[in-house]
Image (cartoon, rainbow, N blue to C red; front, side, top):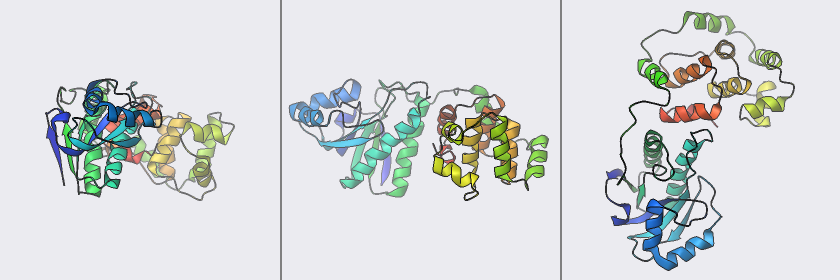
Length: 306
């Protein structure tokens, strides 16, 4: 139906369910979580205690609402602490919303209210917390469209950070499309369009000292089956897969461009994904989780399947 933004206390809202950001023990440790537990009373605490320890980060479970709560159900989701984004926290945060809303659909709920998950005691940067909330909620509405969603922002300084984690990357993103593809890049791509991707990949694997396939596909966050399909020429890797291989093997920008060219692909200045990936490669930043976090901030993480 629609997405509403309010600055009211979530516990003052009437809804079929509240989404409650909690820990894996469902103990009501602080903030909104603690308040919901206090209003729910002993019966609510008993239901939560029965589920203690059954919830993993990014998952959701549901209990009845009791006491003074103005809802029928409480959907609990476990959000991990922010640790500089190196453990895929943003992706887990997005799953918190997805799992919660899918559970609401299972219970045929028509109205759900939630806080800005992660932005309180979990210490997520506001731009990450807001970006993940908006993206997950709008995606859900586009798929189902039959639920009223309310995001309660009370008590938070709700504004996007003026500077990104990597300011000069932000500048490049804003300037994308204003320049042309680098001449050297064009030469590499044009010269490699007919090259065999697998032969080039195997050459690079050997040149970088990898002796086992497992070393490569594990570093690239791939399964053995997916890697073998590529090596045995049973699957053509997409751009995101090539990026994962490049980061896992710590390839240079030029080597990555060569792999792209062997698949008839190239970096462009007009694509956000390309601008961000190229920045990381140019600066020898090969952390796939950190790359994913940055892609999340700019809303183009869908091209990298971690």
